[in-house]
Length: 294
Image 1 (cartoon, rainbow, N blue to C red):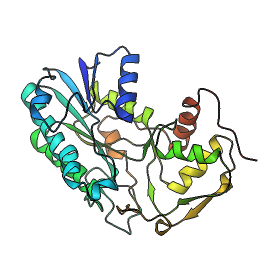
Image 2 (cartoon, rainbow, N blue to C red):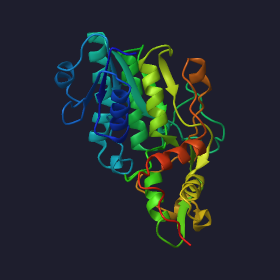
Image 3 (cartoon, helix red, strand yellow):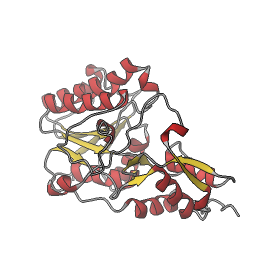
Image 4 (spheres, rainbow, N blue to C red):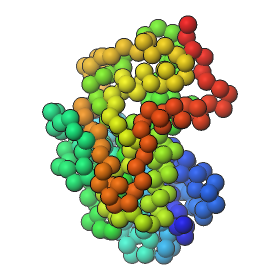
């Protein structure tokens, strides 16, 4: 078990679950929100780190559409900040686990095979470019760091993630239009956090890893499975193409991540995305399932 886990960006969805699960397992956890530790400020980082710490960086600028116009801030948080963390970790003698994204891929419109860890990157929006910059900055400053790419992360409760949104829509009536031409790797936060804690404990080779629930899915697939999981009629979900929902930032058509090389590095593969979704919806429903629509 890691000596101490330091979480940066602990106020976000992944950071909160990570802190809760780590403490629930009896770990020594220092959870720092971005207000408490701004990773764009090297001095702020230095005051918290000690030799032997395992830093898990959950801090990120995740507003994909806003990043198109708020580029300076997105680069500061997603690229400069992780580089700062890696530099201080290297100087302090702390390990670093940095979370990245499937959106470092996507430029190949014809791609239909899962991306391996060393495949050519090619982001299609500013968010993806800033996250790729963060990967490069981390590995340049600390070559033995872990860069963990994940995708389409959700908790599924009362938040603002995709599954939570679909649950709210399922509780209403009428049809729901969901894009069917964006295909990725839906990942349950609880499963991602378990992978992060396994990495923190050692036994996984450093470098770039993929931690996603297994199997490809479109947003349409994910929406229908969410409806079905809570007892709503999945036929209410109607497939549309991306042109139906115009967004400021382009979305890649295909960013499914392969976990094959990560398993070879020692990381336990995550379960199938459908199984994880059913578990997530049940776990995040303390009052029982949402009502179905007749």
